[in-house]
Image (spheres, helix red, strand yellow):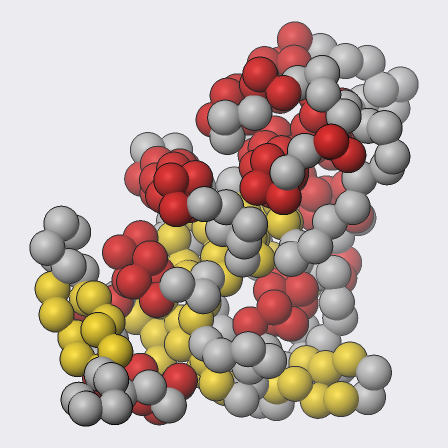
Length: 253
């Protein structure tokens, strides 16, 4: 398929299959097409040519509410209405599951509470989203996506604004959602070593093309990292996870 916006072509002849039941991480330099691909996969943007298929059907043919029952999306930037509380924002993730008359059910309340607890924002439930720090707001938005309880989650740079502790907590949560609950995740990350540690399937992009995809241990090499980022490095085993760990070479390397 061909992807682009404002008459600018971002990717041509792009073909990608997201493996079911995997935690797929997309890596690549800025402006390589990662976010554009995620927007197309979620139907937030339409391909200029070609189609996106979801569960055996062209995604464009689904009603909007049905798409929201099947996939949850966290875009790069989100804005909440002024004065909205944390619990009210997270509750909006239940919209796809509401009946015609919008009756709030026990399962809706349980989903909201579980999502807030999983992201560590339950104690902020009555606080206005406007008053939160960038990291807190990011966790609230993630909670809203989790409250949708969809089998497929698309997250565009979800660790932005988070300190290292909350980054790891979020990545561990995504790993649990994948391993223990069988959810399929597609995540755009910039931190390469996080990508290698947590991804079960890795997609490396540059210039709107996919240069490699597969298990991190099988595809991550110094040659690939240099081809994707122009960065000379060595690859060693992560002493904790045993996954590839990228160590950049300095000027003297």
